[in-house]
Image 1: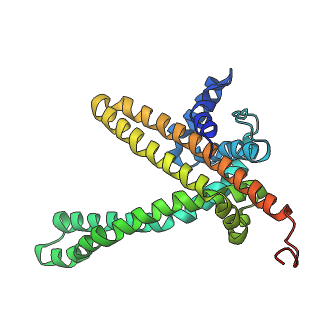
Image 2: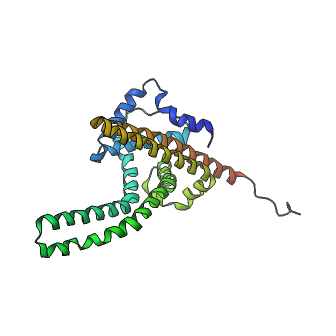
Length: 253
């Protein structure tokens, strides 16, 4: 990954004359993405951005002129990401369920029944000691390996393309340095900007909520740019290797 790509990843959202309007719409969807439905067209918009980079290498934000198409395309990304995140969701829901059972036992149950309902809490130390680190490792692995599959879906415009592991894995292998570099940059942004967001949240309360949505949108735009270019470079390397003539049998004689 070149220095120019890294530099442009941070700058490109603000280079166009109409960037304010486009980012304002995206920000509104990001702000209410927790309602799930607004997240789908936002994913579709990012899908189109990634598609343009894969096909042309251009770094212009698309216009908001295809809401129906964005919703359809966004569903592909949304379903794929939901499937990948489901193990983490199961672990999180299990922890929340145990905590709720403990509260219920302490508040609503007779003293002789509290031990029964508090029994699941015995597993919380196990979850904290074993499952939490595993969940962290799983999240880091997703940051590295999910983007090539996600972009393979984008390139072929079908969800089933994620199952073509051999194809997108070859692209990842051809430019693994680019994917790892993109992952490190995005991870660093997440850590630094989330720390800033949390700090401002405690200092400004409600303003921090609005800032948090802006930070997540910006990190996502940077991530889409970096991973799309990494995939494009990997695809070019695979195509170049396939075009190279095989060495003749007498070449080594």
